Image (cartoon, rainbow, N blue to C red; front, side, top):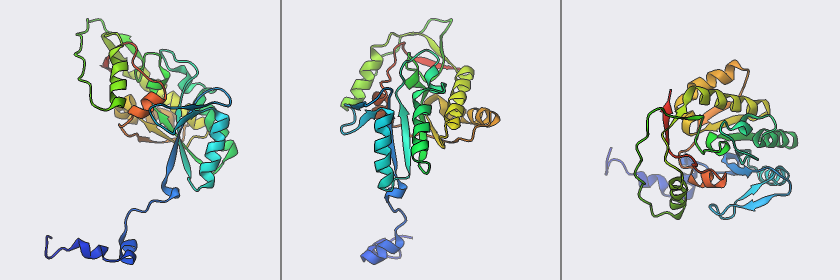
Amino acid sequence: MTFPISRPRRLRKSASLRRLLRETRISPASLVEPFFVCPGKNVRQPISAMPGICRFSVDHLLREARESHRLGIPAVLLFGVPREKDPLGKEAYARDGIVPTAVRALKDALPDLTVITDLCFCEYTDHGHCGVVKKSASRGVPLERPPLLRSPLVRRCQASSMRASIACLRIENTRSVALIAATEFSWSSASAQEAHRASIASPTSGAISELVHDSGGTLCSRLASPWRMPARISVTTALTVGFATACL
């Protein structure tokens, strides 16, 4: 229906009517607070890309999470900053990796807290890609550099990618899916309740969920937002070996 039959403004005539008909209600109980957790003790490191936000070691993370929980925020979202990076992203699924360690500490201190984990493999690999990569047998065609956008944050991310050497690489999906599933299972074993998958995990969610379930994992998973540039910088992720394409 259109005007004059439909007059939505009449539904906003008074504060009491607006409260009665409001569909979206924002309260602390609806919020999830993100945290960037790193190895070490007594670490509180400001993140230049996100003013007012810091990377925390686990001891500081517990203090911040307690305060959030006291304010009524029921959940946290963890982004891990690994101690070391390697081609297979081993610290992502290691039992003593930064995320499982932080999850166990949070659940011991705050059993009622919902702990969500960010699953993007690129922050754990030394090449910066979201999976296992290998060189292709065929020679790669050099890619044109994308034009720099206006945002300083976007320019910084693009510049870090441009400094990478151009190579013809392939993401090995089968091996990558197995390692991502191992990561989810490791975090589930540490008592995480949900994982937000991103990047390479998105088109392979069914396979990952099946592997995790068959292994006895109980993690609830959903796809993360694609707007990840600040988080990418916050976990010090940058491509170091060029661009890669998928390989089933």
